[in-house]
Image (cartoon, rainbow, N blue to C red):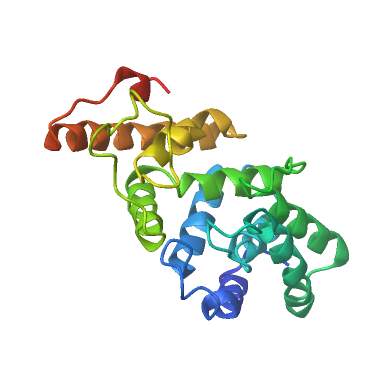
Length: 220
């Protein structure tokens, strides 16, 4: 097994029909994660393992507000096995792919133990940052019926953060802190670049709603 174009085509065909209901976790998301993963990977990474993990990590995609959301990556790992067997992966490769899938999830809280798992986790989190991260954040929040921001206190200066109700709060709760949680040096560098873009957006957003961006949001 290798990271050939043919294998990628076969993986995309397997998952395409499963990725049509959530625009933030669609086939384009998987393509971006694979692109990110290739940018992060080094010569210690098994690219055939990383390729499969990139395209199969969201086989089971539960909504953000589903009480079993933290189990989605484990369910995806289980469902990946027959697919990987059909594609010709051996048992050691399948176990490596399943671990990377399980450990990529923020909510699952599983420590990545391999190079491929660390790369996949960083690659997936990079897709929550930058311009595409902004688009995905508002897409998910809209689908869940969340308000863009609290009109009385947009940046939660005098209230607790509440990203279950306000889309903008999720930036402070999670997104802006992702660079410090990256496991690879390249992943952190890219994350910091993308977060800088998000801060610029927030500054303009704040200006347009007659507010100013607190320094605490800039220096997360």
